[in-house]
Image 1 (tube, rainbow, N blue to C red):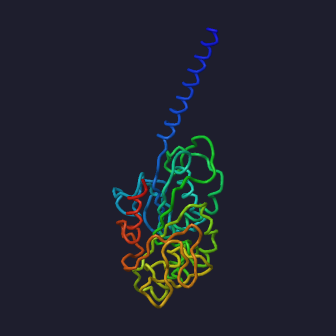
Image 2: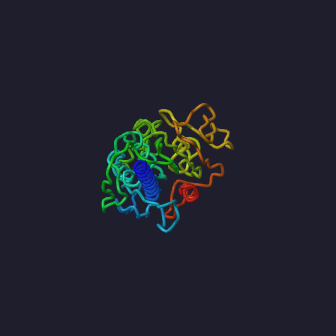
Image 3: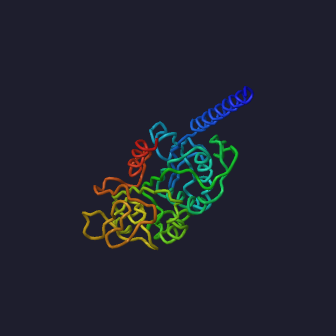
Length: 303
């Protein structure tokens, strides 16, 4: 009987130790989890260093707060979306796999890059990475695989996923390969904009348009109109405005259908509509324009 009691005591202690070890391992895993804020630029002629996630020259001073563990996902802003999208996927693999999670902020054509990556590659098998990039922006394997990326949500400033009429009429440099992708029909047919892998896209629109108001339908920020910045579905651009403008239908906030019946793409939510016509398209080298609103939101909520 003594032997049985001794054996029971030892087995009980062993189970207790194994349980404690499992808890400690779980805590160690939790500690190693890290959140990152990825900033994906738009059309650009900046001298940003590709693969250098600390280079924020496109946006403004790198010392400016812009969400937890901010990283600049630099692509050339010049070539076609399909040609440069690997840089976005490299960053997503680096910082949004394994125990790590990401918040994403994108500007203008960065909206196309983000949507393209999620729609076409967000259901693919990804190698889990170690969040330690080399000079090319590629991280090493940490072991294991997963499907898609760990993304909490996406903030979009002045999104160009619906294209721009400025590209349609050639107002931008015709030698720029990206201009072809930014034509309204091309941008809207590039991928399934409804397939976000259930990640919410929060849209921030600007309405401080000037000389281009006759070219861009409805309200605009000088580069994209509300139909694009507001994530409005359909094969072509619609004329959408603020409630104070009686000449066209309203772009409604949230996920609600717009006045006149047009709808947003799935998982697209208009977070900010520029009723005061105070924000334009451009960062001006200092986190300006509509980007300033997204930056403020990232500081408050990307934690």
